[in-house]
Image 1 (tube, helix red, strand yellow):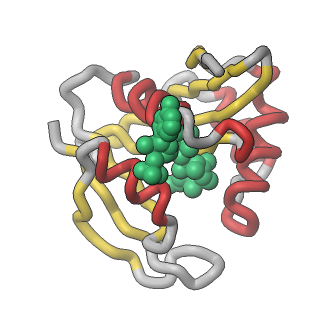
Image 2 (spheres, protein in one colour; image 1 turned 90 degrees about the vertical axis):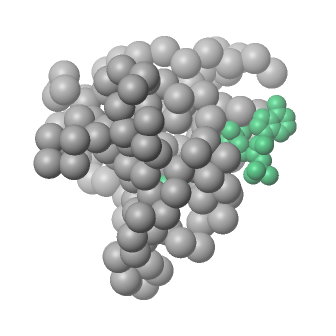
Length: 146
Ligand SMILES: CC(C)(COP(=O)(O)OP(=O)(O)OC[C@H]1O[C@@H](n2cnc3c(N)ncnc32)[C@H](O)[C@@H]1OP(=O)(O)O)[C@@H](O)C(=O)NCCC(=O)NCCS
C-alpha cells in the first residue's frame, strides 16, 4: 500500500500518543510531553498516512550541544510495518534541518529491528548508557555523520 509523509498536525497528537504508549510502554512520553512537542515549532514532526489512516510518527530537533539533529521518537503502527514507512520517516526527520547535518539517537540495544534500520541508514554506535530504559535494557547511542 502506498503511503505519504507529511508534516504532523494537531489532530495527530492523539494517534501519536496512543502509538507511543503501544510501542514504548513504560518509557512512553506523557500527554504533557506530547503537548510540548506539538506546541514547539523548533521540533520537526512528521506523520505517515496510508489509505487515509495514521500509520506512523517521528519527531526530531536540533541539539546545539551535540551540533547535530536529535531523533526524539520514531514509531510505525504494527499493521503498517515492513513497507518502508519507518525508513521514510527517518529520512524526513534527518533532512528537516538540512541534508548535511549529523544525526544522533538513542535506541534499546535489544531492539533489533530498529538497530538494523539505523545501521542500514548509515548510523554507527558511539556509546552505551547502561540500564537506560525502564525494563533495564541499555541504550545504544548511534550517530550518522554526514
Ligand atoms: C522500528 C520501526 C519504526 C520500523 O518501522 P518500519 O516501517 O517497519 O520500517 P521499514 O519498513 O522501513 O523497515 C523495516 C523492514 O521492512 C523492510 N522493508 C522496507 N520496505 C519494504 C517493502 N516495500 N517490502 C518489504 N519489506 C520492506 C526493510 O528492509 C526492513 O527489513 P529488516 O527489518 O529485515 O531489515 C517499527 O518497527 C516500530 O515502530 N517499532 C516500535 C517502535 C520502535 O522501536 N521505534 C524505534 C525507537 S528508537
